[in-house]
Amino acid sequence: MPSFPLICNNERTSDWELFDQVRSRPIVRTPFENGAVQTRTRVTTSRWKFSVGANLMTTTLYNTLTAFFDANQGGAFDFIHPITGVTHEVRFSEDELPGAKPTGTGSNARWSISGIALEETAGSTVVTETTTTTTTT
Image (tube, rainbow, N blue to C red):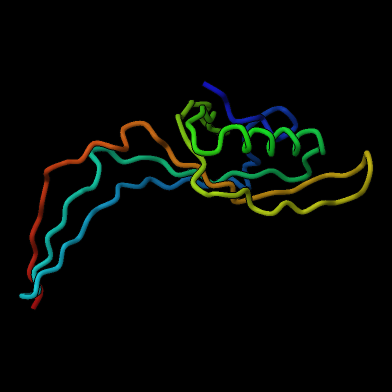
């Protein structure tokens, strides 16, 4: 399986100040005319969503990132958590990379990009049968 590139000076997958993670477990809500709401979880396990980025990437690293996106958009790949070192199976959450901001020109050019959205894929497709009904007054 391909691995997300080490876009921060070939050392890690994201600058720490541009990294964010959220634990997600979607639910389905079904409202009824009497005010009751039925809920159930959409999946059996929660999963991680990550936002990554890098400041001042070289043009070579920026080109590596865009080539990786082009080759792996729509498919799963490994992502090494930049802080814990744990490997997660993820996919790109969006259809495009966020805009990159250039600094400098020629061999001194550097690129900054943030908000690359990734979501964990493992365990995200099994539906659970748990339901809860509440009534509002």
